[in-house]
Amino acid sequence: MNRSMAAPSVLEIRLAGGIYALNRFLMTLQNKRVPVAGVTIDGDREASRITLRLDCPEETARRYTALLSSLEDVEEVGPAEEDTPETADPTNPASKR
Image 1 (cartoon, rainbow, N blue to C red):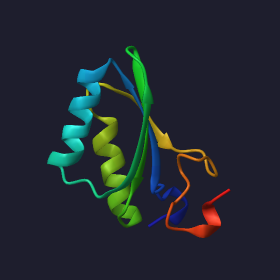
Image 2: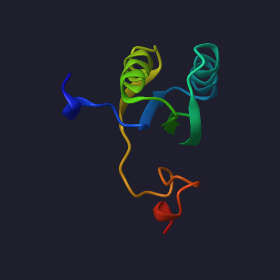
Image 3: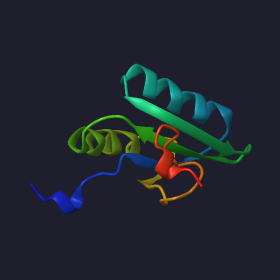
Image 4: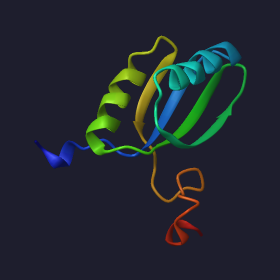
């Protein structure tokens, strides 16, 4: 297994559409029992940006990334930028600014 291709535990997802696309996405997280440790949502009527912190091993995170990237309203899934307020771990004092 190649460790350099490990999926991040913090993802940034961009959704097309409005509140219905966001609702479908959140219901998928719930129905698939995705181990979400934190979520930040920002958006408007046209699109949404979601920062998702997963609480699972790297292999499982890769599988959830593949699942989420195949959803109808998802435009993009990728690693979130490090050291942003949205990705800071509230339980880790070292991640606070």
